[in-house]
Image (cartoon, rainbow, N blue to C red; front, side, top):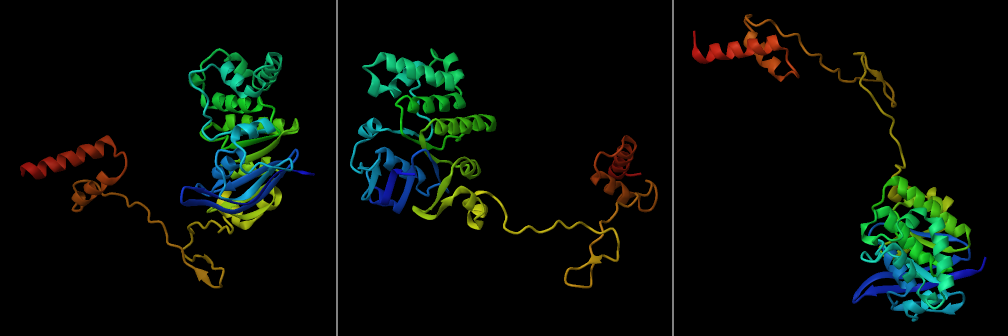
Length: 314
């Protein structure tokens, strides 16, 4: 495969604050590549640099062999790079159709082209077709994510950059979104995916990079990363060692200890039977019955009678 996008030793910063250092990766034609990492690792910052929203201090970005490091974002869109930002960022007071038309801005002089592209998006997302005249701000979170994805596809990108597409969505909607991402890729569009759900990301992509505090600390095909102990423990919530469950033994002799000998387990004390009120220990018994859950009506009555007698005297 030939490299569609190449990032070489990028250093990214916000003012004087460095966010990423020595970041290098590539995306091949027809590939899904994911960037995973904790919050603040530099994933979204890297996507912004690829889309042209943030210029790197040092390093180079090449797209289809052309150096685009200093190219403004609108020119990168013309070359075939599209960004779906975190949080969707649809235009809330415009309709679904108007949002999609803005995605095809570079084809604004070709009405037939725009109409044809919109038909493809409506075929991909039938719900958007139903909501075509509805204001985007009134859509659900899942529908807005569909709209943001459809708007990005209206420019017919060679590379689509997705920033946290599952953020804030219900699990069933997330499954639909990832199925759509795979369908987009199968149709020939390369995908650079930043995703908080590392499990979904590694199941969807073919290769991945792990960012930690602004630097790439691991990379490889996703099958390898899923089996990496560091990735499993940090991002897949899998313990590296599992301790067997141990229960309380019913036998006073205990159970065998792994190191040899016998290990005694504490017995669970049984609840003593309360003596009847009126016995020498009835005051203790009635006080203990107050701590037991849901005492019977007769026991409550006895407790109240004893308390009243104690208060007023003989």
